[in-house]
Length: 297
Image 1 (cartoon, rainbow, N blue to C red):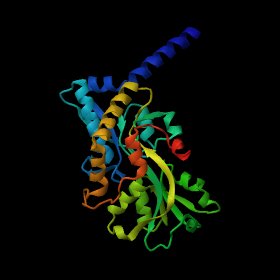
Image 2: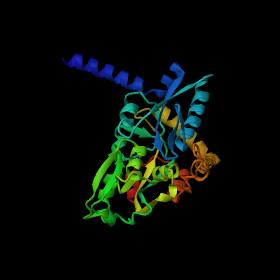
Image 3: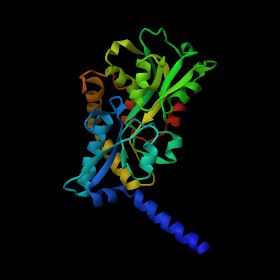
Image 4: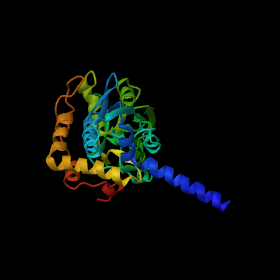
């Protein structure tokens, strides 16, 4: 019995290590699957017809071009796999997605299941409301409907905020960020709590962007990073080295300007979000520290 268990353990170990060798998988297949989001603001979104663009999507394309070069591949087939807040981690874990290029917060709990590349954006969680709502603070959410996206951490963050003590609001869930914004837009929610970049991106794409505003203090500071499989140091190094080179050359800053400070498709509106100091610090000193390390400051 013990021998059988030992054999099973060894087989399991081999299969896990094989699954985690992403560079070998890419070289053998000549293909790679990129996890993308349909409505994660300017970080990752769809233009329709299977086209995906954004700050993180473009970073990942540059990373994968470096991987292709290092592996000596004449051609690399990059496939898109749309993911949601709910399924993104399982799809990375089970090998469906090789590199997830969306809007995922790097936190201690998730680091038990997956790995993260060096932080490319330090997000600030905010509250979006209609400009004419009269809501300007957390306290004014009492008795209101607050939208968030299923599988995200934002409403938990709001509930933990000391300013939310005694504030009784009802959560309403969107299946993705566009759905959550629609809850706010249609009046089914009085506020939408989410990463500031996602809120700003959805507001920029709204029919009347001036109808919405961000209010209240920053609820939390969260490092956002590209997600990969755990226990695959060779692939993590390849991804990190590529991103660090972009940070050093100033290319990452140019990509930020392109996606957050200049008009972007499809409506050619600006998100209008200059890079914040926390993000600049992450570029200057590349790291993969989880959200909890930021809270200690």
